[in-house]
Length: 238
Image (cartoon, rainbow, N blue to C red; front, top):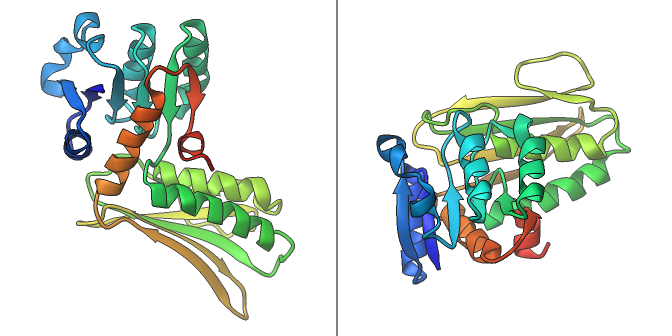
């Protein structure tokens, strides 16, 4: 499979390593320095594009891939206020987008555990739920996309929580997400249910970027020659 990498930072390089080890070919690498090479001629050499940039550029990158007929796997976070527009563009062009806030297989299993635990805890008002997410200092958005995904799952299942906030709050209906930035830290997400009697915690800690990269390549293999909008849930068959 021929892959275009849109974004060639630490994650892009990790994806390249995994893709090459699996026998795939990298036909295009786009970063800030050579964005002028992101052309129709170059991107259409690829079977699939994998996009890991940032909130400032992700929307235009994903949109461009769809419009040029190349399936795109995106892991950029902080831009989903424009998601409805991407869905519209994908439908108009019969395109393919796989989006996840986190491509780690472990994290996606963690999502399923988080949803189930929230359902179990919903009747027990004595337990307050909060979250902490820890990342490296180069992480541009806070809270992380993964933390937001976890929070939205909790809000969908625990009626006493109405919104997530990224600051301290004494409002009982707020789900507090605490964001910490410390080096080196590929990513840790903790969900805590605490009462006067005891505490229940679930934690996912990434040790390296390889888990994210492996999942992104798996998603690219899934997206090749497909049409529609997908998540890692479909990729993993969860």
